[in-house]
Amino acid sequence: TTRLQDSRSYSARVDVTRDLTLFGRSTELQFGAQYDDRSKEDTRQTLEIVPAMLKAAGVAFPSPADFAINDPYKGNLPLGYAFRYFSESGAKAIWNDLHGRGLSRVQANTSETNNYKVSEKVLAGYAMATTYFDWGNILFGVRAERVENQGEALVNKGSGFEQVRVGDDNIVVLPSAHLNWDISDQLKLRLSANTGAARPDFSLLRPNYSVSDEDEVISGGNPSAGPEKAVGVDAYLEWYLPTGAFFSVGAYYKHLSDVLFSIEYPRFGSDVLNQPSLDRSEYAYATTDNGGSGYLGGFEIAASQTLEPFADRLGLPDWASGFGVRGNLTLNTSETETPDGRKVPLPGASDLIYNAALPYERYGLSTSLSWQYRTEWLDSLGDGDILGDGYWDEVGRLDFRASYAFNDNAEIYFDANNLLNEPGIRYQGETWRVSEYERFGARYMIGLRLNF
Image 1 (cartoon, rainbow, N blue to C red):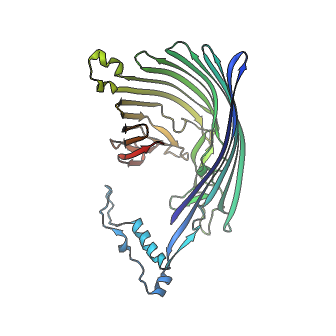
Image 2 (image 1 turned 90 degrees about the vertical axis):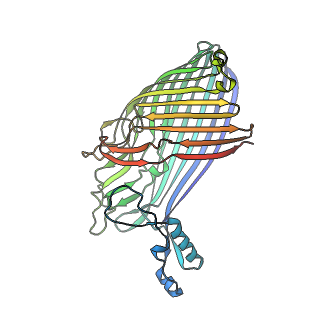
């Protein structure tokens, strides 16, 4: 079975800027509008080899040995039995050969429970003004969005699959104000009152279901899932030292509402997917839903310094002045209300995140060796049983990046990620209750970047 995905996006935008005097101060006024029309279609098709067609043509039906792989078992768990791996590309090559002789065929839409089409239309407008003072500037504005989404899918209503179309729309208005105060040539204070909204992804809005009778789980989208919203304030103090160093410290707080959760309800509660002698109404139901309100608050510090200002003083050669150091630390606290009324941390938010890097910039060469770490974070909600909610465990990553610019138009680059092959570990409720353990290996990429 082959999965086909088709995504399309159309966008139009206009922006207008005008300089004027407001309250006796020089002000830059900006306003504009944007229209986006996006869609995603997900279908399945089966590449089928028909025995009757082969028999009529006097062609033997392919044997599994024709596309088997003789590699030994790659896992470490003792299975107590043996099996062979098979080559997907080898099986497709056999099908393609038979198809060229008219001895195989394509069956489209072979999985009613996985086909869907979701579209989204967004009309947005904004207006903002930046007023300049001797001590800095104030920026204030508002953005309004009207979002209309529609989904199509095949749903089993008891007598077979039928086409279902559902849709929803919402309007959000997002004002904000920012103050940038130049306390001195070295110190800058930034204050902000802001709002925001995050819409669910296309795949979360699909109006269809995927059924696993083996696991007794039904999963599907939620066309009624709305955007999660935030109203926040933050303050940052930035210090630009004469040595070229940078240091900042800041704090932030956001009030959250309609937070989106990946949740598994204990039972589906409907007979629309039942089959003769098969009751699926008691299956667990995994979907995305809006919860209640909550908050996210935190504290952040960042610093960077190069060796260049100290090179002459320390008697270092010119090439050594390209070394530097960068780092940042974020401390978070959060709480949100789940769709079933429990209090949990904000999904995806770690209590501690830090990054440290050793960069080098000289003679067109740019390199960076960096370490990134974050503590555990909530990934999904459990179904209320003793196992608890799903978390990703703490993880660190060592990465290396390098590039060399031959000139303004040509640059070669090399990226190496996850050099220590740190595992990704998911657990339910307690760290010892591991539900997933994967090592992804290091990943390398080299390329040439051309600018015209």
